[in-house]
Image (cartoon, rainbow, N blue to C red):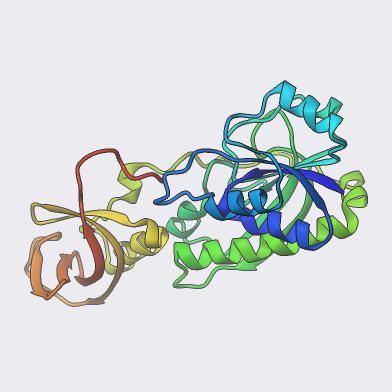
Length: 282
């Protein structure tokens, strides 16, 4: 199959898997990334090594017509922020990889909320493109359990590994999967996470605080410790009765800080200072 890929490194292994399984790439559509939380350097470098065109702007009707002229058969979307409409007259197949067990978890990036809500199971879905985000009939899914101490980074790795498996299924059986695609029906939409949801609430329990930190992992949760604002990516904690105000710094050793929560203490072992300026992306 000749295919175009629209995405970034987030699910860039899909691009590599399709190539490794014998599909021929004709073009990469990507987007600007901040190189802090969003990256596309690996995917772009791979496309350039294959000498295929790379486009960083939104796909237009003219781009779709050009895909048709190049003999492109499949448009594969994975981590692309712009809605693509009108593809039906230009390519036989257009599909999206979404990191949730659709129809649950539609939206721009549901992984944080999956951990915040302590869901027991998660998944990755490949579905056909429709005129609304994440709503097309399901081609195939991969489900997996979430561990009690799941972190954003382990969940992301599970999603990436599942996406590679799904990509292999599509290579083997896309026409049949397309013909048998199942409509989603009603689902849930999870909007982009808010700064409040990303902020540690020290008046919560030890479990609640640690869950927030795990939910963001290396993307970092936000916290106020006394009068200082910090980003946090790693911590542990224990229950203990105390008389400290939640959110107060009660102990420090080198860069490790112990902060009071409602029912115990949190030891922050991975953190960075808050730097005023553009908000860190989530």
